[in-house]
Image (tube, rainbow, N blue to C red):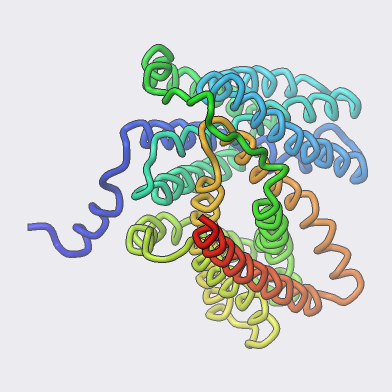
Length: 409
């Protein structure tokens, strides 16, 4: 007889479509090879002998390409379909990784990085649209959580393997990243043949309303708030490790463990927690609560003593905030879409996170330069509180708007 804990995990992972599992497997393979970007700055400085400024520009081109790629990917997904965009982005992206490994000048690396980033990020809106297509109202949040789990496992595996390969030869990173992209595309073609996919895509009624994400005022406010939160959240990976090293004098091994703990907790509890919460309350309620918890974790860095246990508590809190907010962010944007505009909505959501990746290091470094780490944690806590308040009032506005619509009808 299964124990209650095993039964709980079984229920959390049951009821998802076969194609949702296939998409998550493809995502895991793809993210397991993600090792060029995390080591790009070190590679360009140590191996190609770029200046720090040139290396920064390369990463800036990657960020700009990511935003452009998400926009283009969303448009193409609505016009062509999520299947072809995913396969094409993975195949072409894999080839571009191999080509980029043979570029050695600042101009060629910058151009190659920009084009590669456009191709790579065009995959995200298509993948998000596919997950939405193969889920229903009862399991859509869990379907995205499964995809997040695959992404986190892939990142953890790819980061560790990338560090090992880089110690031998940086050029191996480009080959592994490129080959895993190509393998993920071939796996998608094998598991989900195109002929079968075309038959399962629902026909879209010609009179279906196809509102643009860029004219949806509620969604644009949601995106602005998401960008603010993402900018705060990325400091966990960008500035917190530096803070732990410089201010709290933790060694690199323990700092690495703290970062890994985030992924471990997601794998262990996210699906179970989402299974318990999904459908019980408005997604914006969970998003608000998650952002408050994450913001409180930043404030605790100023309020509690500099100990190992406090660092562990902060990781647990920010991970809980992530688990409560991010899966339900996906639920919210999906709820505002239909088959004709889902790619555009997915693109705008991806673009908000890509923009935050560019803003976060610049903002964090400037705040630290003017007021130190203490000021940074107070700013992040305050921004999270502002963002959570924004989501709270957004929920109130939507609820009131629905009431007015019902009374009008």
